[in-house]
Image 1 (cartoon, helix red, strand yellow):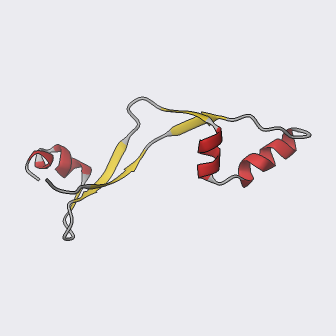
Image 2: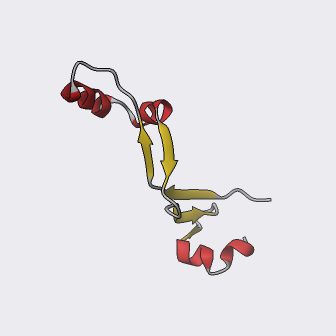
Amino acid sequence: MGTYKFDWQDIVHGQIEIEAENGVEAEQILHAMKLQERLNLSEIGVDKDSLKIKFVDLGFDDLLTPEEWEDGLKQYT
């Protein structure tokens, strides 16, 4: 059994309710939040098929591109 480190990206979207005096203040609050805070306070979803592998680290400086990984190397590592 091995350890595989994936560098990935995905498109995430969310919906959050913010209480504020007006829309300008609400947007300022939204922009001031750290990403993790927005995620924790939001109802979130992801776009279908938007998960992308940027590279796979097998250790020992052995990095695979997404193409190398998909071309069958994932079955042999």
